[in-house]
Image (cartoon, rainbow, N blue to C red; front, side, top):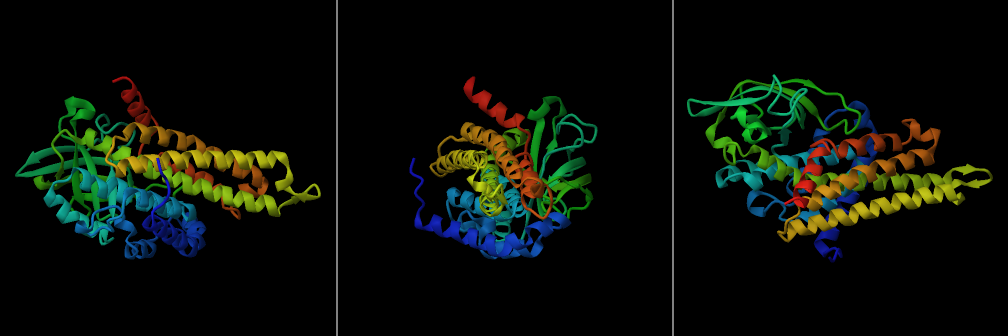
Length: 379
C-alpha cells in the first residue's frame, strides 16, 4: 500500500502542523491546568475547514479524503491533545454519525452548520455505573404525541455542556439488551436537557466531559438516527471510525513525547556528557521510535482502506488496541528519560502521559475493540 502523500495531503498536514506549533503549543499547558474549553481556538480551526475536513463540499465540508483528516488529527494532537480530542469527538463521533447513518433531511439540516463550525457536536452513550441498558438511571425513550420522550441520565458526555447538538443513545426496548438501543439527534437547547456537572479528568482536560440529565426531553420523530433498535449497530460503526482517529491522536502525543525526549537527552549533561550518549537512553529512544512507526503505519493503512471503501473494522480495532499499549509505553519511556524533572509540570511529558491514556479510552473501553476482533476471527 502506497503511503506517499499527495500534494493536497502534504498541504493539509503542513497547515495543521504550522497551526499547532504557532497557536496550540503555547496554550496547551495552560488549558490543561484550567480545564477550560478553548472556544476561540475552535472558531479559528473552523475557519481553516478543520471541523469538516473529510465531509463533502455539498454539506459545507472541505471535501478532503479521510487520510487527510487523520493527518490533521495527528498533527493537532502533537501540539495539544485536548484540542485534538475536541475535534475528533465533533468529527468522528457526532458529525460522522449523521453523515453515515442519517437520512438526507438530517444531513441537510445538521451537517452544514457542523462542518463550518457553527455548531459543535457531542456524544452521549455512557451512563453512571452500568451499561446503557442496565443501570437505574438509563436513558429510556418512549413515544407519545408523535415525539420520542427521553428520560434518564448520561455520564461522561463528550463535549458536554459546550456542544450544540448531541448524538444520544437511549433504550426503546429494554428486554432486548444492547439490541434495544436507539440513537437520536438531540439539540442542546431542548427543554428538559440539563448539564448537571462537569467531570474532572486525569488528562484531555479541556475536552469537556459532563453528566447530563434528560427529564422528559421531547425529540421529534424525524430525529431518530437510523431505525429503532439500531443503536448498537450504529455505535459499533461509529466506534470503528473513531478508533482510527484515536490512534492518530496517540501518534501525535507519542511523537511529541519522543521529540521532547530527544531534545532533553541531547541537552541534559550527566557523567561528563549528554545522556544521549548512554546506551540505555539510546535503546529507549529507539523503542519509542519503533512503536510510533508501527502505530503510524497501521493507522495510515486503515485510513487508506476507508478511502477505498473497503472493510476496515477489524484492522481499526487491532490498530486501536496496539496504539493503546504503544502510546503509554512511549510516554512512560519519555518520563523515564526526563527523570525527576519529567514528573514535574515544568516539563510536558507528565501531561503527555495523562493525555495519551485518555486518547484511547474516551469513546470506548478496550473490550469493544477486542469484541470486534474476536467476532471477525470466529465468523
